Each structure stands twice: as structure tokens, then as C-alpha cells.
Length: 386
Length: 125
Image 1 (cartoon, helix red, strand yellow):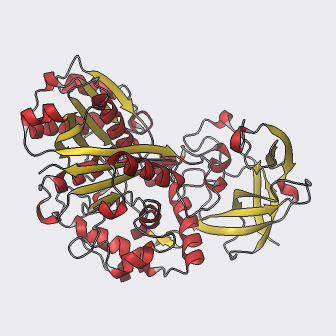
Image 2: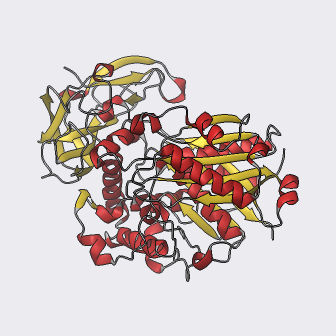
Image 3: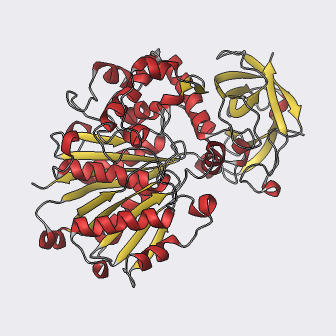
């Protein structure tokens, strides 16, 4: 099996990209990534596009082939990867498989979504359409699942409501130093705690925004990477897993089985354990998810993640394990198909020393991309080579 | 109208039912949960609802004690339900009240003919 390297990365401005549509965003990130990796489009053998719902949001389907044409990457093999909110992570897995298997010597992964032309209710409904009919007819939304889970977590573990606000405050502070983040604005705990209720006990600042954007990564075998650059990162472990489609059928609502299983697989492949991880990007679509992933990935005991957040363990500049140095989905934004790829972009930049004011000391990084409400999850471990 | 949970050959029960249960067990019976009271496991009130959904929308995960239905196997089964009020606490008892449409068919993205829309809201006992 080939050792798979990442030799280039890009991310568009995340936010409201008025007048620009999914193909525009994908092409922007794709071209920037080709330039960053110094790879000719003609040398791309496989092109993967992570996207959840361009047909539903925009009426545009067939985007992988369209992107191959726009980038002049024809005759590259193309494939769309849809795994709802974890489409980006699933794209990393598909791109990794294409290189590790020897099927491709140069694979471009581009993730993107155009969402902000829809109302909040419409966008929420497109996302909620992933639910089982028995769930959907109750009007449940992904934010509602977060409210249900957050109340259960706070009550079960006697955690203070303020601990969730601290996640939002931290990730907004990190986003200030990310020029591509949707929000580059600090907030204080009081603002988070007094913002409007969205899904009781969670409030506006416990949720990520609706976002347009795109991100890309270039993957190839390590020996090919060495022909292009000395500064590359290795994907040392990656795995994906599922949990129940119907959320309430899980034995413990505070455990995401897909996080646990994909994490186990990624640790096993890489030979690493949670103590080896220097920096992590977790899927903070809702603040409560940061706790559940910290616990599912072994960074904290069950019911204890909130204590580590309160102690500053996850702070970027002073914490032992900086989490969401990019600002996370919370501050950076969440263009569904792009988010998992953008997590990979942040970890790659941290490992090759290109994270600018967000830079932390890191040799091993992890990203965890969650689809649905933990329905499907991809965990990726990357390592520096310099 | 019923709210059918499915019992599998290994004694496990789920709502909704699936073609196969845990461990690949086949379905063997159904239980109408609307005949049982339930206990609130957790709840929320959603104030940002999709098209065709009442706002605010009170939701809960509830647990039914169905131990009287069968001699062995699972004693409880959980479901996500709408509540009639947010005047509830975790652990409260609730019972089913029938509703012709839990949300407006066709207002959202889901094909109206692809699923049922009637069901139950739950009120405090």
C-alpha cells in the first residue's frame, strides 16, 4: 500500500458569496490548490468532489464532470462523494483510497457547497431530509437533535451551561486569525449565553452558520510528493464508521459510536494514540459536538470533556491540545461538502508550518468530520515529515 | 392510527421498525406504543423550524415501558415525539394525543407521498 502524502491545499473565503454558485466556488478552490501544489491539471488522474446537495440547493447536478472541464483536468476520472455533513471527510477517505491502492498517482479533492441563497428554514430542511421518515414528520432538525443531546449531557454529567459557551468563545477567538473564516469576530461568554434560543438549552452562538465555500487538497504517493516539494504531510491513519440512522435508537445519547469506531480505526492504522495528537479539528457544528468528539476520540473520559474546556486544555496558544485552531465550523462556517476538506486544510497547514498567526507546534494532527447527528463519521490522522 | 414498534426474534424492540433488528434478527411482532404512557428522557423547544413545521416545536425523546407486552426481551423502547407543551421536565410522564398531520406534507423538501404524516403528540400525564 502506498504511503499517501498531501502536497497542496486551498480554501476560498467562507461566508455569503453572493452571485457565485457551486461550480464557481469549486473551480476557485481547485485552481488555487493546483497552484499551491504546483501541479498541472493535466497530471490529475482522479478528481473527487465532496458535496451534499447541489441538486437540492441549486438544481445543479453532475458537478464532478463540470469541474474537470472547468479545470481542464479532462480525462481525469471523477466522482462525487456525498456523506451529508461528512462529505468532505469521506472525500479525503476516497482520495486516500485512490492513491493508497495505486489507482492514481495524483488525486485532487475539492469540497464545496452553495447554501446562503436559501432561507434558514429551507436550508435546515434540506439538511434534515437525511432523517428517517419517523423522525422527519416530527419536524426534527439537526439543531433540535443538538438541543436534545445537550440537555441530556448537562443533566447526566452535572455540567454547567457555561461550559458550552466557552467552546463558542474559544472557536470565535481562533477564527479572528483566519482570514477565510465567515466570522472573524470575538464574542464573550455573556453574549453567547444571552443570545436567542434556537433549540433549548442551546442558543444562537452554539450553532454554526449557513455558509457558501469550497476547499481542496492534493494527494499523491510519497515518492511522487518528493518530486514536487520537501514540505508535505502524510495521512498516517484514516477510517470511517456509521451509527444508527435513527438517533434515539442509540443506547446512550451522549456517545457517538461512529466517532469512537472511526477514531479506533485511524489510531490503529497510524500506530498513534490520543496522547500523540498535538492539534485537532473537530466538527463543532454545535458546541455540544466538541464535547462528544473529545470523549469519543479518547481526549477526555466520558462526561469529562467540559472540565478540560473549562481548564483551558483546548485553547490554541496555551492549551495542551489546541482544538479548532481554524475557528471550527462555529466561526469559520459550514459549507457542508467543504467542511471536512477544510478541516484537512487546517491540519495540513499546521503540520507544514503555514498556519500563520494560528500556528501551533504540531507533528501529529487529527480531524473528525461528522455527518448527520453522528450517523457517519470520518477520522483522519496526519503527520508532519520535517 | 397506531404508533407501531417492532419486536424482533431475539426479543429486542425498536421504533421505528427495520427489515432486520440488532444482530440481524427478523421482525416477529408489533406493539402499538400509543396505548402506553412514556417518560421524558430529554426534551427541547425548537424555535427555528423548517417550512410546514409549527413554531415553536416542542420535541422529546421518550421511553416506553412495554414490559407487560412480552414475557422476555426488551422492557423499554424509545421514540422521538412532538410534545404539546414545553412545561415538562426530564422524567415526567406523557401520553399520546392523535394528530392528523404532525407537519404540513409538501411544504418541505420530502415527497409528500413517500411517507405518512399523521401521528401523535404527547401531553403531560
